[in-house]
Image (cartoon, one colour):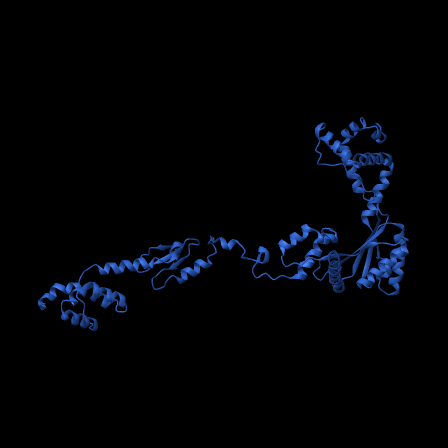
Length: 438
């Protein structure tokens, strides 16, 4: 082949020369250019073989040939610059200076630099921490779980605490007034198996021991609070008799102001009394309670009702506290009369003038409420025949609470027509009927 034929093949070396100048570090692109442009001539003449290797080793200026490769490379760069996923959540902004590019967050509208030299890492970091970005990943709204034996799922990294679980069971039994036999019921055990698969079933005897153990811990905590109380402690006490068992009960509550000037109160005694139910026996019970809690020298006063045996009890307590020098002002402020009880006595004294009428009204309401069927019929008549709001019920009073007597009289006035109608149709009820004067 003549040397003059080189002019015929020199354009073929344009892409290769361009690649050699602009991308000498890309051997694959170099090889592709060589293969595309020159392999046909290599087979015909060794001259082109020498020329190729001479060109690869030389740094001479390339032959300026416009073959479209420049546009191809720039288009590839533009395509690569927008492949990052951050541009799905960022918007490019045009600036006056065309060499400067900005990006704006689609959520919080914050503007960042978007130069090619800056990369997109800072944009990705912002998107990961953007407060206004709403996550669409469903895994963010679910708790990761894994299956245990039996296929029951539980939370990963969950540490089972047997003592804490047993304490929760004790709290459940006490707060709900459940029997200790509840822990043996199949429904309870099924619930615990689902809620806490690692929980081991316990017997009712174990449940009873747990309740007493946690009570002892709580008692020690309250005892420590009473010992640290910066103020003196005031007591309130009340006794009452059960209508069903005729047992006498006592409840003692301690009141004090803590170091943060907040009023605190705790029940420190609730139990049945043993006969005889007199002032001396109740005084012994109260002294024993105070010594057990360690506050027998921190008492300021005690509030009681006006029962006669309480006067005897207070006299005994004063004598014991004087002997221990644990009473202020020689007991002048030790006994406080219950204001609610005094007010109740005043109201009861005023109601003695109408005691017969109040007694009949009380018996009428008691008669209506005695049987469930009778009570249901009464409210049905009030609703259907008299169009009254039966959500307001008949009230029965408690003799030691004057306000309950007031509520009883108020409800009887509301149902006055229904009560009179009932008296005309029930012979047994007529003995409680009121006269016109009454």
